[in-house]
Length: 406
Image 1 (tube, rainbow, N blue to C red):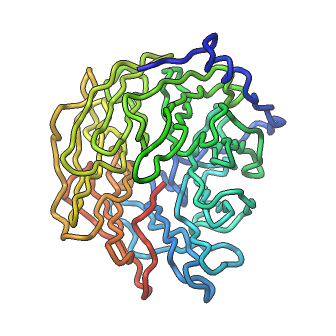
Image 2: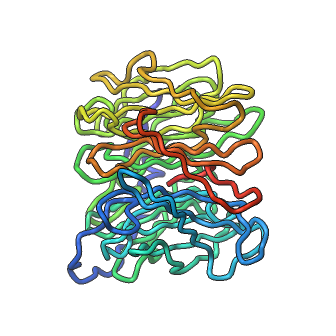
């Protein structure tokens, strides 16, 4: 493992990268921001999913963002939000992120589309189209969090060779700067967590998403700390992972020491790096005979240490393994395996952990898109089958539900 810091060649390149210019400060907000994913502002996270193949406005594969309000019984009614002018094959909703961007007490959503990103405002009745931005790439990776601690959610979206930062404010998201580290694929994989342990979310970014059949060149994972002035590469640090085929990232406090640890998914292994604040430890390696995929981190047990959920795919069957957080990382073997689904459902193709039920304990949300892309979304309270709730759309035809969660 190689670690870059300011002063090394790579660190100099990072420090020389563009620092963000803070947008003018808003007046002191009057409302408390909504919890991430709480679209209707009732204190519970809602089930938010993309339906990128949904027919909307008479346009095939235009796509949409779907919301079921959270609660002990998740709402049966699906609330569907589309672009103001749906476009055929735009595939809105393939990538999602959520936070309260305008601090009005309702969580908002930013979603990818074909050469576009779309912002929806939360409300007591669901999501409403707010604005869109033309974008240089399709299905851009994105994340949302309050990186500067001003109470307004911010967003980061991968652009063309850079990460573009949107600052939240009373009028929603506005572009505020870019992040670069010299790599063309910077930001191809993103995660958010308090890696430094300063109570402020940080951005974790990998250089590129490997392409089949073989990745080429070194791969770097960069941590960009949040601060009162926003995100800047001036204080960023990086490390080169043991493998160069990292295609997914997650960050969360697995060890319970107040710092978010960094988890990397590769073709055959999951690498768990404990955060040291300004660096990472030698990784704990979890090996798989099948293909480990999407990752999610959250405290499902409520013991102050997050659990790691890993989607595993075989030839015709998918399941989710949950690893308990420990002082040294995670357990060597899964403490729970969720595999009651039928074959070819794609169960776990997307994973998200948030308090949907509303009992102050996180729940696991899993997408099950199915091989024909019709799909469902599953809510598993505290990551268990007990109390399982399934939701799907009643509309006919393929809609891609289950491929994407925030």
